[in-house]
Length: 179
Image 1 (tube, rainbow, N blue to C red):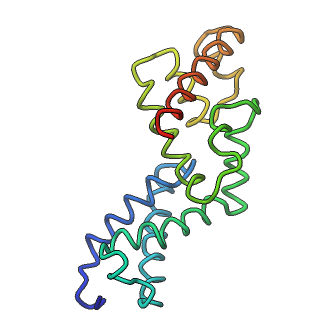
Image 2: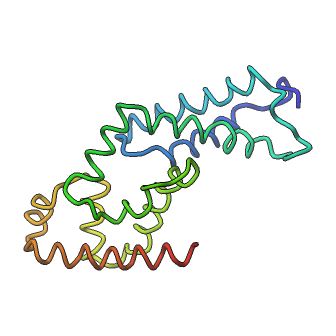
């Protein structure tokens, strides 16, 4: 594939959108900038060694950039010491038995990146259950503590625990259906 024949603008747009969907726990403004930087890095990395793309093996150039280059860049970014520390403090703040722990522990690179996508799927699955979605969003996307959630939702710690158990059941059922 000749690089001078590639229209990079639509390629860059697709890569930015893909990187954005994989980035963990960044503010919306930061996420867009980081996604753009990672997409540009993926293209640069390809241009530095274009012979790694083999159209005979897979003719889809964008697929190659996404899954062979960009995913590893996003993975490295998400696991950098700063981001890893932020993710750890948000995701496992007050409960070692949190639902995402079932997905994020002991995973290979692809599974770890896909854990964020899985959490988004669970969010869509429970979007109509107000009792579960409120806890899910506050806990896993806003990073709030149990006490803060109980206060905001005006529920007891026991009610919080009951809802969390329900959330775990739904999460496990969803995980079983996709395995």
